[in-house]
Image (cartoon, rainbow, N blue to C red; front, side):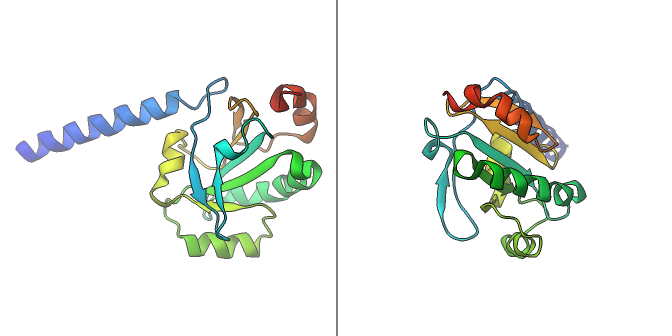
Length: 166
């Protein structure tokens, strides 16, 4: 009986933490900062871009069929916005490995940096519950878009002043 109560308490705490994480990652909220290493060994932090350029985060997994479908559109955005928009893909780390993510990135010609979120720390901070989840974060650190589809380049251009602070 004591073991059951312990599990119930554990689940209650876990669920409370999840709902709090979800509450911190909505459009209009400040994006949680993070630091990570890309699969090619470069250190990245959200704070590196704040005040300089908007950030486009893509949370994905190798086993997600919709994530695969979005790659050409994400590559097109990366090409169109080039250095004006920082693009970063974050593998959520669930039922995946860094090696699988690296192989997938190469096989599917992902033209943007990829982070393997070991332990799903970044994903949890953003309240990610499904893939793909995509976010546009302005230079002010505020989340301007959150959805499962790649935002249209025309929509980004329309809102560029707000995203870039210029």
